[in-house]
Length: 145
Image (spheres, rainbow, N blue to C red):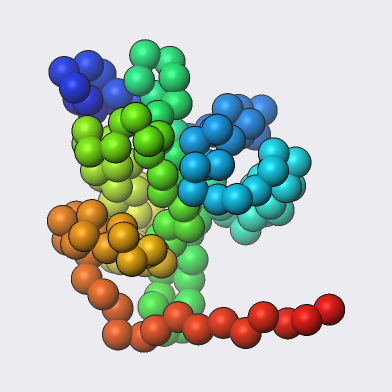
């Protein structure tokens, strides 16, 4: 439990039957309809993806999607795919609490780094959490069908 506006904030992994509870918050970050959200979460879970939620008085107010990764370049690390706090709760420490959970989880797994892709408007938040811009830019190529 962490403190949030002088109240206990519960942060924990969601079980598959609870995934849909996270959808209203995730939908504030990702433009996915509910069936696509559930299908993608299910598929990603086969590779270790987990949804972690921050609860305030039983209501989900923040969600983080994370997964353990091991690559030749980076070794074992935690990758945060999604981090979103409900619009009404932004700026209250919920995001910071979710990031602290991720860091503790990565350390418990013996990992030495956390990587994520950040939207430009979220970079100041991550910098306040001691993240630095990585020199290797992400690139993509959209494949037409």
